[in-house]
Amino acid sequence: MGSGDAEIDVRAHLTAALPELHAFVRAIAGPGLRAHESTEDLVQSVCREALDHEARFRTGGQREFRQWVFREARRKVLSRARHHAAAKRDAGRVELDDDPDALARLAVGYSSFSTPSRRIERKEEVARLERAIHELEDDQRTALLLAHIAQWSRREIAEEMGRSEGAVRMLLHRAVAQLSTRL
Image (tube, rainbow, N blue to C red; front, side, top):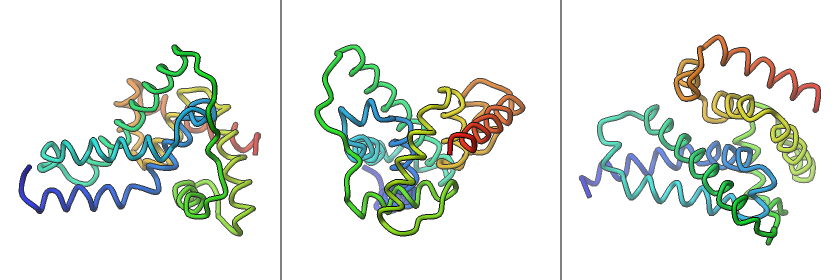
């Protein structure tokens, strides 16, 4: 391990990113993977990995750390989805429950899409939004979540997805238009 300062910074950055990370993982995972694995477990796994490898983040800033965390979360979710698809396992549980703390965290993460109100409305709104997001094409969903939840710039998304900034802008435009229609 390194100095105490690096560990405190990593923990502080993780804490700051947690609401958005939780919402991002739920949306990327979709209902299929969430039927097999808890969003909390996936987020906890990403956080544990960040803490285990905190030395890698000593020289970067908060922006670089957030990019790594969301990239790692996406990689982990896609890997787990492939695992379950290959194993053709039956769903053991469905996660969207009545935990008000979990719903509040989701509402914070989805704040760029919706304004939370009462608990029941929030649950219905989150479920409706997640269904609509999950119905988007993979590239549109990825660009939308990286832009609105992970708060990446268009340039950063373009680099991650191997596309031009113009192509990312078009993906985002189409994704928002489709969301508007579905919602």
